Length: 312
Length: 282
Image (cartoon, rainbow over all chains, first blue to last red; front, top):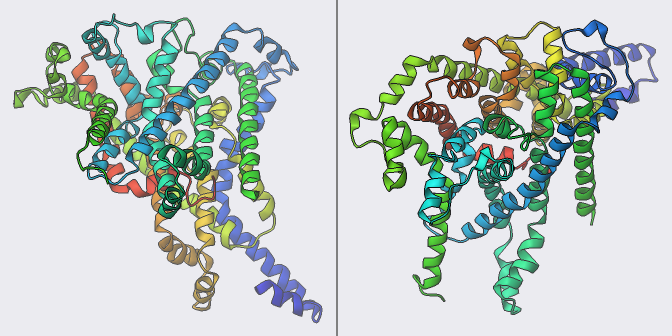
């Protein structure tokens, strides 16, 4: 508003221009004072590290000998695709994502549908389903290590009750990744249940009533009303789950240290191991660049999809 | 209509209850096991008693006493509280200020900076862990408390959230405050922040929870045990011989209590923040 007034008076007096510039300058100074702390931190810990990661990816940077660092072109990437542990970690990560998404989202939607009905005890059930969300990843990882202990853990005790033989779970190269999928879905489902529930409760009651009058049965109402109207919620949940699943790290780190025989090594864990434990910053950065690009593209694709959807 | 307790209703409730058991039994077992002697945990494994604390009241807290003498748990909890509070307060102030600038102030480069901000939303933190660490290493902050707090203070998502919230505050309020002689700083603290309590609560609690639960970053930047937050201490305690199950469960329980309290007090804001509502991100 101020601006338009100043603009109108500007041509009349040349002195005014100086005042305008002064005001502009002050406006900028005040605004950047407010932006300053945030910009500085984002620059130092997000922008610069991202740029550095891109640059390091093409060098042989070893953390302890920064002066010997030299440009090596695409050598890291060539090495990457011949590195069996990296390929294994990529495969494990994809396996985790592909298994977790239907399990966790399916469980969350199922729980939400069960609770989407007036019931006195709902508050209690909601708290129960949500309880794993309250625990940190470290806590649930340690807790499940005890529950899943092959010799004296509770889960094998329960299996024995049903006459099933004890399972190795996290100690088996075949079962470890599946175990981590189940534990992760168990922890994540409760939060998404609440988000689904909010989405379900946004669907107006009269839509259902109208459908009932049209003679739709329960199943038809679910397919033709609930699911389409739940789409924005589902897309949001799908994308957030997808992205966070790609970044799996804490559970294997605490529960299996990537083992047995790298069967739970994930890409982010491998970035940590090569870059931090082994201090090969250059090599780790090349993995980070490749993987960051993949996640970035997935996010962008999703934004486009959602936008197009909204335009319709 | 259907009878109140038809077979379907019974089936429904059985289903709900079984699922409730599935989701909550580890938490119950954790708390129960922390309140009984080590041997009892494994003796009870095959019975319902696994989910009950010891029958002797005197034994309920003995594992807590033992683990508190072996490890300086109060120090780790204190560290976590310190990091969490610093990050929560800092996040609100720093991101709030930036969100205010984007929502209500005029400055050159606004469009470009906002574009960059939105682009930053998609940078996955986990992939730049290593280069973040090299920065901390270069500026000499390795093994300092500042290294834990500083990177967590500003976040593109929180700035965006504050900006959207501030946009909804009517321009007239700011104009009338200006006429009363308030400067921009006073407008921010006396109008914007008090009128945005939900945003403040959301960012503050989520920042605290995020900091409390953070594991990998403090593990990387800290070497001195006396600065460890509780999450890092948990894995250290769980691998310090002799390992007693009841003591580990006591540590897990202690570390979860603050979170339970926060979720009870601030559940509304947490859900709003985590579900991305109020931010326009869908």
